Image (tube, rainbow, N blue to C red):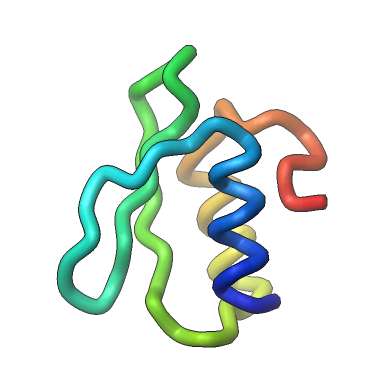
Length: 67
């Protein structure tokens, strides 16, 4: 999956960018929760395992957030 698609899905789900330095960007869960965060690598392609990890770390994301 492309990095652009993952970032767009996170933005549409209400997530906010917390940090933008180093090899990863750190995204925070929607403002309704505010307790979870997940790093997203800056590669052009994000593997399925990383997407699954984002889902696990940010448990408050709604189902189907990636579509």
